[in-house]
Image 1 (cartoon, rainbow, N blue to C red):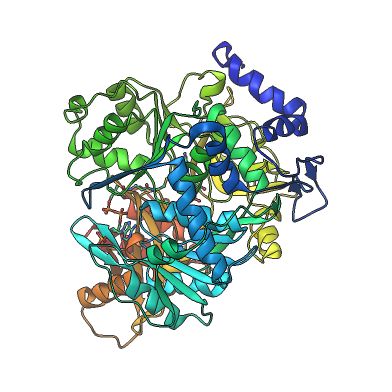
Image 2: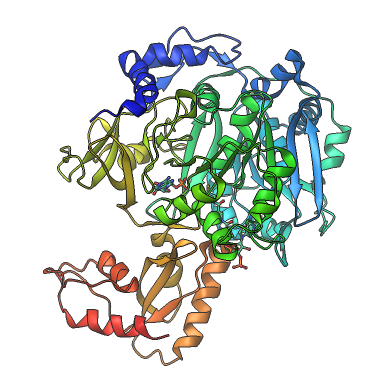
Length: 631
Ligand code: COA
Ligand code: AMP
């Protein structure tokens, strides 16, 4: 039933539905094009079509030069707030432009040009933003690798992207621990068959590291010596970045982003979704290594002329659970965007909001959440404490911006805790059964998007159109398969409940259980294994490994478990948060030999498990249940 309270939303969504190309043509007018689009969409290009196929622009021009030319040069573009180092900095648009143009010059003089890839391995420092924008300025394609990944993961990305240059920091700073990035980079380069021509290293005070002669150079020195480089004109369909994300196999998917569609979608979303305009302060407490960081720490806020906060710290422990509120108050944040896991961490330490009460949050207007479903308790807790709208919105790396949400620019409709809101203009969302037929309202199915995807969404995977089709388009012809299960209710609210594949969501980070299984299976004592996501009060899910040892393996369980934990940390990285491996006698399988992972997950969560009819031996479940109940 249409809800009178969502009239603004209905009008917004209908405006798009009545004339999708007209809607995006109007949104495109917010961008400064070198050649404006005459054609809005070409269904004949790429796996499902391409947006703005005849247009040309530079997204860095739109993020920086344009604002300086329009008189925003003195306004802060970035505020860096780093409780882990005690540092703070403000970079005006003019300063950010100068640094970016210089780094672009340094890269160009080292042979980096349009279409070349550059891998970035950086913590939350302004130079990470500068590096991304410098690539964009040249038409080069950046690929940021999250700092919590290990050398082998970095190596896999370097091997796939074949970068001409790598830009890395010497170290990152985690609470109580220095993460030395440089040795990880050295190890990755030793593993990778591809060698970049040069590595530019940001030598941080906490641990500058040593440079390898002939390959490494000091980033800041290279920038200081370089001449500023102008923006290079690129096609709207040129790639802006590759962002690797977990697929269903160990090999990460290189999600591709174009320049024009992304610029239009993000610029449009800043007012429509977040209710932000030029001069406003926006803070996305995520990491530049994730899609949320790409879109709403870097490109979205800068395209809109906002001030973006770059935060190098945690929600708790840097120094306390009041850190987020301190940053909001100190920098006048208007909209905060974070992951539910961060809120749960704060709630655990400061359930009554005592620390929150010490800060002036009068300028904060809304809190947006994404990365995982926000559990209703946490959403209600945050809304009560803040007295502001708390908006869960559903995303994927592939989409680049939200699929569903609540739209401040159109006037908010009432929130329903646990729901991700309603589809954004641009998306036709359906919930399908296995045969591809729509399920009734309120029934859970696979959430799918009718093609074409809107601007901003991945046009394909990097050098892998066939994999894109197979992973997303083949299951339901004419649709993009989100691999999320959920439902649309009678009032059009969307409820995203779980993944339909082997992806798990650990503290807002997307991980493949298949990739962790590959690591466990490589241990000499492991005969077979299964990894499932077990429910966790803080992180949402954590990976749990169940392993069957090879016959004749006599070593103690604790010893093998410790080795497996160390192996996952070494191969995938600390971000996997793999802390629990248990030895079992055998794994439950169907008669055709498929491991019953969904059943194992229920067992891990202590749920009642009905013995599946396809199982070969029901006794196994009792055995495993007993192993899992052990402290
Ligand atoms: N570089 C290197 N290591 C990193 C890292 C980075 N950028 N980010 C995290 N890690 C490490 C952590 O130090 C930790 O290592 P440890 O095993 O030695 O303790 C490990 O990876 C797991 O980190 P994390 O999942 O962050 O757990 P945590 O216990 O340190 O913190 C939270 C818990 C809830 C505070 C934290 O997960 C958090 O802030 N999450 C927000 C997630 C987020 O923003 N997601 C983005 C999606 S929008
Ligand atoms: P990532 O690609 O890392 O952003 O992870 C995307 C996945 O995270 C989605 O497919 C969902 O499974 C989950 N996810 C992200 N945001 C939400 C949300 N607001 N509600 C429910 N699930 C979400």
